[in-house]
Length: 358
Image 1 (cartoon, one colour):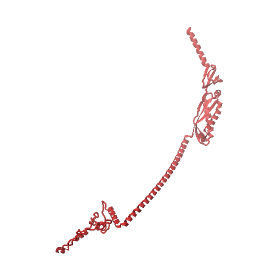
Image 2: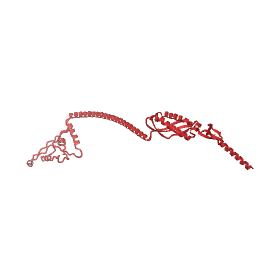
Image 3: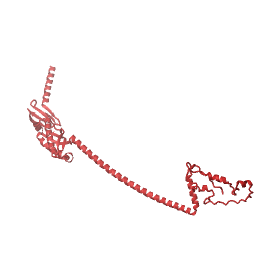
Image 4: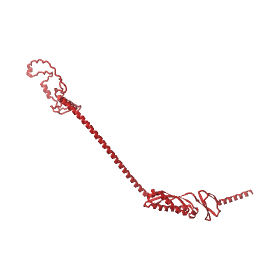
């Protein structure tokens, strides 16, 4: 008996739960519900909470209260200046009249399809009347507002409110973009070449000015150095002239010594000179006085008695020795005269003629 009563209670409880499930329904905060009776709208529920319906007679359709998005496919639009644009746009919309929405499109899939057609048509109308610069840069915000108003006016008959329409991308087609990119690249290269040319011109101008300044400075320095050198040479010539005027013999002797120093150096000292050349006058003539040097007088020696020549000396024609202490026979003098060094045969040997001591 107890098991049968428990079974009955469970069955009753299950029937009550099934009836409650089929009678009650919950509306969430993000939803709004439309109660239909045999397919006809009976009432609209927009308040969140627990509601009821008649089982097997009424059913409920739920619609989203939140903002919904519509992302259209990129489409090509021709602007007023006959330039092609690839436009990618999207829209934000919501269901404001569930009953009208149910009566016209019944679900979101059909609503998205019709709303996409409205958006595409509005894009072509508005952007087709604008120029390329207005779409890309100048009037883009105003154009999007116009598109939103047109799409919203057409979508009101579907119980939809279009909140906003935005253009994500409005670019030229790929072929046009490449051509414009190449043209922009060419223009930038031209501008870079102009800037480089201007820099090169400025560099050359600065370099020319610097070279001119260097030339002027060098010319001034060269002129000043030449002036100083000329003054020095004039002073040197004046001193030499003064010295030459005071003692011409010493000046000739000094110049001969300088010539000997420059000519008789180590190495090749061969010369081809005339025998009577005055180049070696101080070597060839030992008795030539040295200018500036006082020669002391020779000491007087008592005259020696000259013996009478013998008969042999008279026959040979001999001569008496000189009183100066240096005895040179005529034969020796002739020999020395005949043995004068031939400068053409052996220019490396210099005649060793030294002046005798006074």
